Length: 528
Image 1 (tube, helix red, strand yellow):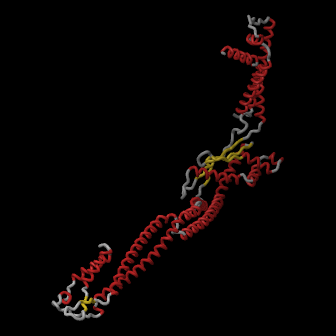
Image 2: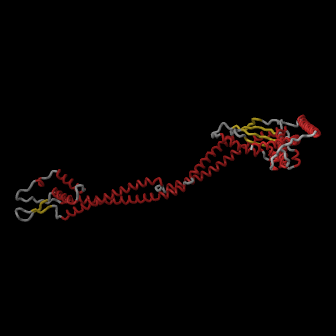
Image 3: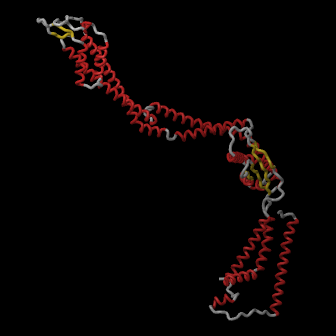
């Protein structure tokens, strides 16, 4: 592998050694050709002016650095379009007599297009600076044109800032009002829906369920109270009926002396005790009626009793007959109490029944609201699906409108910022195009590449054997020995003469090329 590399390297070295004169001649020929092209190319000069934008110190809405740079690019872009308008460029062409040959040969629109291509307005990569440059063949005119462009740029920007601010403020206000009308309609629809279905909204569902549970508990308690009152009223009615079946409030007592029986009044305490015994056979001690009768017995036992009720009759003598008035009868009073209690229970049962009907209606309404909550939730979600997006958009428009109004006020007061020329246009001493170094470098690279290409082609088409390895590869036989070439005296003399001719030719050509370059330099036609 190493031997093959050495053989290939020897081939290339031998090739370039044999083609060295060709490479030198190509370089010597390309250099004057490049110089001629450089001299024949018209000189283009460029003048540059640098402007800065000084933002307002009074800014209620300070912006970030990126926003300021973006705003500067927008202002520069808009002003640049106005600066290179047909009216401005045509006026400057006539004022400075620009492109006289093109004006004489071509329409003014074509000349204006050429001038637009020669004007470059480019903001800097960072900061509030940008450049205005112009390319032309006349150095003094180039400087004057750049100065004129800088002045007009500042005038247009100051004049257009108010118009632009008015346009932006009008646009943002229109967009904001349109968004506000949509938002108002949306808010009204949401308010109407919530007012119409307030009790059925999803956020009311827990409260409705809690109220419904409370009403169901109240309904159960009312039912229990109605049942207890009905049972008590039934008992009172039975007792009242039993009292009504008695003939009077007195009982018949036998006459000990014989004869007709006499009426003896019934002891109220004894009657209540008998009534208590009857109740205990049916109910427990905790029954309300049992408790009521016990309370009456305790009350009568605590009250003082008249002698006629406490003293017994004489032996063999019947109790004195007594016929009390109906209003003073104990049985009548008890019956009246029973009737009053029955009426009270009837009123209580009627009131509780009406209350339960109202509670049942409320429970049905709450149940309807609870069942409708999922439907209202879906409808509310559909109604408010895009509300948040609309709200964000409206907030952004309000913010932009405030900024636009502030910018408009500042522009009207000339406080929105101003452009200033930091680096004015200068007289261009060296041409912008053509570039001497670049042209000469391109000629040198081209001539060298052309020489290498010719050498490679000659190597490809050359079928002669230069080294023993080529012969061995071709014959597939080893080379026994190599005999060096021994030139004769005549051949040596011819080689010396040919070397002198080539050297003198190269020297003469080199002197011509150097003289050509020296003449161009002396005539100040070469600018580096």
